[in-house]
Image 1 (tube, rainbow, N blue to C red):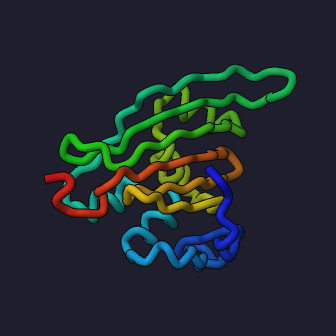
Image 2 (image 1 turned 90 degrees about the vertical axis):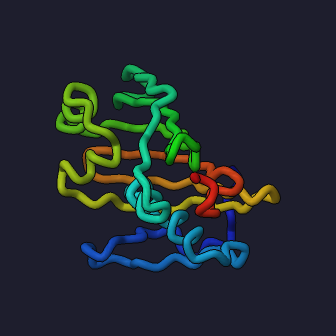
Length: 172
């Protein structure tokens, strides 16, 4: 995904619990407020989608491939692709590369099977969020690339929000 130079800041987009910057100007093409909320979600997209639709949203794992450490990459890494699904309709497709940076992260993710979003809650840590790019497409889909990072875990994520998903009737 091409980097969008209209994104004002690539610094941490914090949460209400952190004394960090909490604002990021998105390009004017993102005029829909809920679209801007989804684009700046920092590890809580599933919950936001569930609130928006007032329905449960599940994560269907398409693949979660472990890449063993090597000389060039000493970290345990996962290539992962998931669909976020509401009422049997895929609303978002996410591809990510997950880097486990500590033994605790390795234990939680591999042995205890803790999900990525749940990891942050489980560790009671709020990830740094860096929005790398955001793009609106002619078919009314949109996408973003971003990084979530704590001292234990780093996630590089590309998300594609499918055409029509902003309409509440999409999941009916």
